[in-house]
Length: 267
Ligand code: ATP
Image (cartoon, rainbow, N blue to C red; front, side):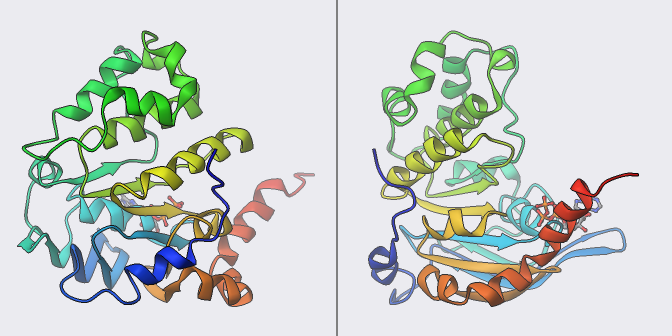
C-alpha cells in the first residue's frame, strides 16, 4: 500500500514551483459574498497540469466557498480561467463537463442507488474526454467497496460514502479534481485508506484538496495555500510550509479554539 504520509517534495518541483507556461486553472481576484458576509476576498489561485495542491485554513476561513466558486456552485466575482476558457459565468454542469469535478463535503450520493449505480453516475459528466479510471479501478483503489457493489448508498458508512463519492468523481475523467475535506468525520483507519488512495490518484489527475488537517494534507500535496478570513495568508511548497509549522499553526489557531470550546466542561 502507498504510504500517504510520505513526503512528495520531489514531485513538487516537477510542476508547481518550476512550471512554465499557462496554468490549467487560474483564478484572480476571486470574491464570494453571502449577503453582508465576504467569505472569500479577492484571492489568486493557480493550478498547473498534474499538480496536487491543498487549500488549508481554520473553520470559516472560506475554503469550501472557494471550491464552490471554482465549480460555479456559488456566484463569484473575479476571473476563473480553466483550460484557457473564462468560466466565471459558466453553469456548474458545463464546468463539470469541461473536467472540473467537485467532490463536495457531505458526499451527496443518491441514497436509493447502489454503490455501483452511484459510481456509474460519474460517467455522465465525462463528456468526450478519454476515461482515466474504469469502475474496476475504483474497486482496486478502495477494496472495501468490492463487497458493497449492490448496497444502497444510504446503508453505507460515512467512510464508504466518501470512497464512493471520490470514485464517482474519478469516473468523470477529471482534468482537475476538487476535494472538500475528504477526511472529515472519518475514523483514523479510514482516513489512512482514503489518503492512501489519493496518493495514487494524484498521479493521474490534478487535485485541489481542502483540508483542516494540515499535516495530513501536506504529506500528500506538492504545494498549499493557507486561507485566513477569506484571504491567502501563506502559500508555498509543502516542504516549506512544513518547515514553517509554528506560523502555519497560527493561521489554523481558530480551529483549535473551536475545538477547545467544543470540549469545554459545561458546568
Ligand atoms: P469549514 O471548514 O468550517 O467548512 P470553510 O473554510 O470551508 O469552513 P466556508 O464554509 O467557505 O469556510 O465559510 C466561509 C464564511 O462564509 C463563514 O463565515 C461562513 O459562515 C460563511 N458562509 C458560508 N456559506 C454561507 C451561506 N450559504 N450563507 C451565508 N454565509 C455563509
